[in-house]
Image (cartoon, rainbow, N blue to C red; front, side, top):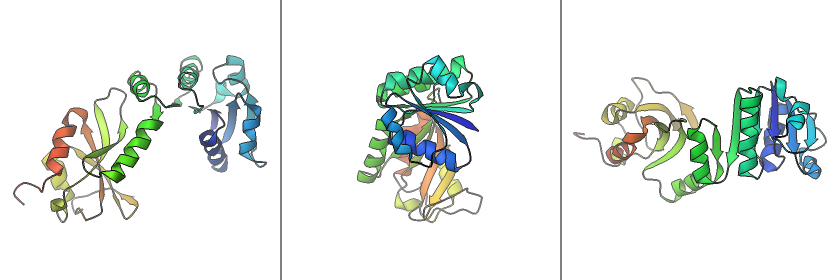
Length: 220
């Protein structure tokens, strides 16, 4: 596929390099021409100096045939504007914008503009390691009603069937991470110490689910 990336900082550079390594064609846009030096001598894609929401620049980048667009510059406003232009003016199917401001990220997500909230994600990851109780949000749909979260289980759940987590919470286990590897559950899966359980749930049930899993299963 063809991907257009706006922003040739560390993130944009890594995205462009990995996409190209995977066999995709890439065009990358940045206002600072010197930024393209990060790409290295082996980069074969298109580099364009300019702003990523400029129609002419986007057309030169191949936006009209692009399958995806990533806005990862340092400016929230620029990223959102560019993402909207790519999606609404050029009909790009897969669009994502990096947003630093947590409040803005939530607003745009609910407006249907896929965002990666850098500050929120980083804070969540650090807090998870400082205080592992509760849950760590991993994904939320645009309406804000459905959440995927990594949940902390009391040690009393170890040795019990994974299905007991579902029946006790009303949520669905999307997957379990065990020893660093993801796995889907079946009727024989048993929760083990060290498992990371990823639950798909209704947002309104989050507090109740955290409370249920913070104590041993009832009757066991």
